[in-house]
Amino acid sequence: MAAHHHILERIGVKVLAISTDSVFAHKVFAETSPSARKVQFPLISDRNQFISRIYGVLREDLGFTFRATFIIAPGGEIKYSSLYPPEVARNIAEIIRVIQGLQYEEATGEGIPAGWHPGKQGIKKDFALVGRF
Image (cartoon, rainbow, N blue to C red; front, side, top):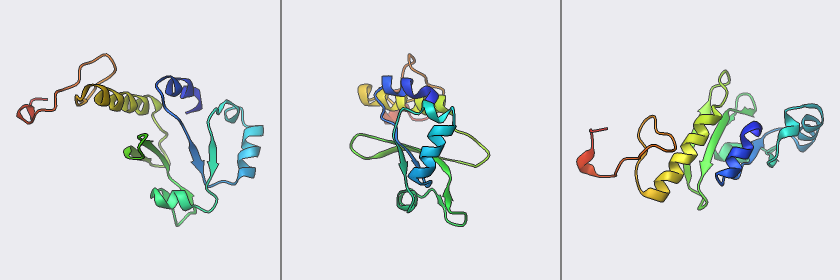
């Protein structure tokens, strides 16, 4: 995420990272990890696991969370969520594409077809067109 933060900022996204680690663990991570030094967004400690429980990402049996991504609109509505298996990392390019698609839909009122990317047309939201795309 840190390597793509500049792209997210350019398209108007504010990033927050939340972890069940303590602020002390975050501090050590920031001091010792070259990748952590690139993080330019807030890293929030959810030590009491309150946020993790509310969003349904806490692995109660293990005491830590799944990797998850939530795209939340300025009004607080969750527009997208994804829960990743421990063996699979995020696809930041796909997350950016989803954000751009949501922004396109908001600006044009058009839906986003499969395989859409910025520069392609959306589809009109018309019940008569159902099944054509």
